[in-house]
Length: 602
Image (cartoon, rainbow, N blue to C red; front, top):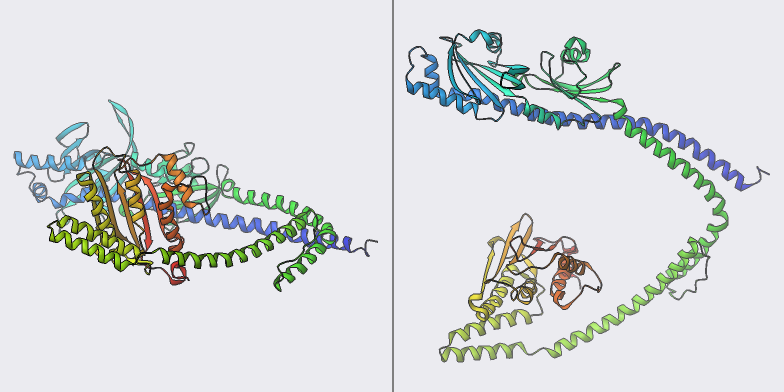
């Protein structure tokens, strides 16, 4: 019975064909995901350490540059060359200015020491004391001075150490020692030492690791811990074999896999140049954190695989009885529609998904048929409406001639103001009644708006001020005709009357990359946040909505025309200004591809 049953054979085949690839895919996916995540984490952390190295190197170089700046002070260098001869007040003042300039050049500098090699004097100052001149103190830092002399860069960075003072808590500091020589000779003139707080280094370090799952260290070239995120790691190089291995590495950056009782994972490191101290930035990531995502992905794959296996078995039993036959019937109806028969009588195919699909297909065909009929009706109505518009238009030449005659009479009667107003009105009517233009240069739109605002200025007098600013390079950019007038008219409808001061409106047109940016600002009362949300909802509704009103129809018209002409390339934003008033921001592409410009479609 099992061999002769297609259902049983299909089930057995699907089980084998599903379980074997599924198990294989889980194993392959796990190892591939594990390795990919490891490489990804290593790469991301290498980039992070590199950025941290750049920031730390820049900080140390900035401090190092303060010591090098002493060479730019001729008076100070001359004093070092003749320190036993010059001790006048002027020279002492120069020394004080130099040391105080360095001391306050960076917030973390705690103390500045300048040891004069010729007479073994030291000049020091801190942010807790004034400039002090002392003698016979060179031996205190002699070892570090020798290292600075032996360094090819005449500079040595002393590792982090704890500074104990009687009046303050212990502080962590590091020092930069520089040898000042009598260039071009190698004669040592003095030694400059900067004692610097470690606060900045700690702050930079905390941005380079995840405190919950990673460890981060800064190690000096001698193997001393400068910063450690794990306080259980002792500051002893002999107890941390990984530090010795890291220092012995020949590469300045790279990765190491390390396995021991206290840590089992990957170490990523990057080393600063010797000119910046040669410190190592080390990040240790345990395998448990590194492969956590891989374990999660594997669990998800198993869960979905089991669900998929169950669904495959159920689908196998269901396909033969309930899916194949209704689909074939539906395909027959589709073939009839393809032949042009839109009056297909589709019989019910059941109450399941296939039945719903058949019902929706029937509704879709009915809607398509209805839309085709409506399209024909709309085309006829459009023709009728165009005819009505033509019939309702007054002859433009008659209006222009009449306005010109009125203007001429005004001039004859010495009333130039009337002539000017009639001229502006004539421009507005000529511009608005020209039905042949859909896209116009920005200059034409600005001239039209200027004429409109001049008429409003004549009406409101000193109670209205306006300005129009447009860059010359955008004056010839084509824009939809009468795109600005509804916005400005909206201000006179809603913002001008509610003001408590002289009404102001500003129009700015500038080039922004490959776009034309237009800003219309006014000093009206603006709108409430609730109303602003309602307006934005209305603008983005394709059909009528409860938020629609006559007060928004102008903005809706502008928004719709922008979408029609530029699709999603245009920006139309409304917002309240911080100091009161309303802002409309329009951003249009300067060049639009022909196939995307809906205004060119007929």
